[in-house]
Length: 429
Ligand code: NAD
Image (cartoon, rainbow, N blue to C red; front, side, top):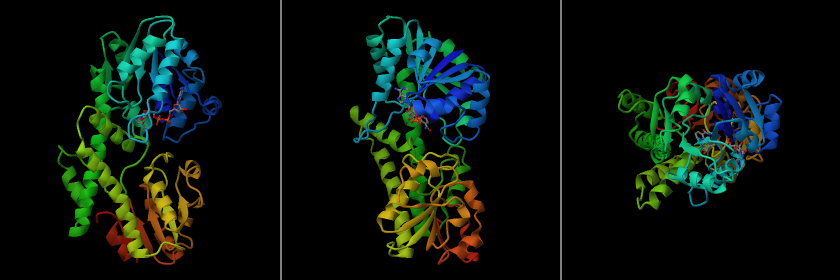
């Protein structure tokens, strides 16, 4: 099928590449001319495992192309996906101006029937607004359908998640676009949930809020574990074997961050507020999440005492492993708070150094993780990169003035660390 995706970011680019990979012809549109130029010249503006190969292969085959022109994208396709940002406003509600602008642009360019699919995460009832806007701004007065198709990919595993989704949600107002939507996703062999648009939009916010809740739940348990001398990982393992609960997302640590969970949670609280529901459960999820960072910093100052004039080595800047994304990264927040207390920092991340340079100033960026500890008073693990488990611990111990490690992601075994001579503090153990 001929598909267009407007917004070529983490969601749009990976979706475009995966659609092309299963045989569709895809036009990816972005209004960031520099990004489009990079893509046209064979560069990839984001890091996502496996994405480089997919984009290169499908661009070469002519199934994937890039442009800055929404009009060109709309002209070339029957189905137009919207994957632009839906950032939070200061009060927590969603800024829908990107969606509204794209809806107007699509409307202005339509000369025949189109299916307009919203992939961005939006508040319930946004589909209605998109439909109204398109109707209002479509000069040609052609027919169209608006569909909701929320995206559930995890950054760091985006290609895998798109190629093998747990489910595909399709929200429609009539049956007319259903066959085309099924055809688009046929090759992905996933269960397809066809529902109304409002339910589809709610599925996304309800899912992300639930996952955030699961993380805060285990983080609250980690506080209990520390007080009781229990081990949160053992507790999570025991709980997770119950198939009604499941082990995933039961990882205690510095708390969740990233461009989705914090904003989707605040958005959902606002959405509930607008219909008169005070969603206090989710407010508590936010409170516990913020508390994890405070408690971790206290753990550092309890041991190191005054941070002024101390040098700390920080491993990890991305908001989680396998990505270069630092948007709302707990690791960045931690660095900034430690800096505020007067600490100087040596930092390293396997993939996120370039993006971190734009938001983190006054730190020393270190290329090799094994050099981070050089001349530091303590080491801090802030992101759960697997490769940090391969850190040369003996070398790090020698490089530090004292062998102290604060592990915000529980990457190492406490007993083993102690045996190797470390003062080792982790979360909930
Ligand atoms: P992003 O910032 O990485 O990408 C968005 C892109 O849209 C940018 O490249 C931007 O230049 C482009 N853009 C903005 N306005 C435009 C316009 N008028 N015309 C053309 N292009 C335009 O954002 P993202 O992370 O891909 O997120 C997009 C949406 O998907 C958001 O609603 C987000 O909540 C949702 N989502 C994100 C993820 C994720 O893991 N990143 C997962 C699921 C859902």
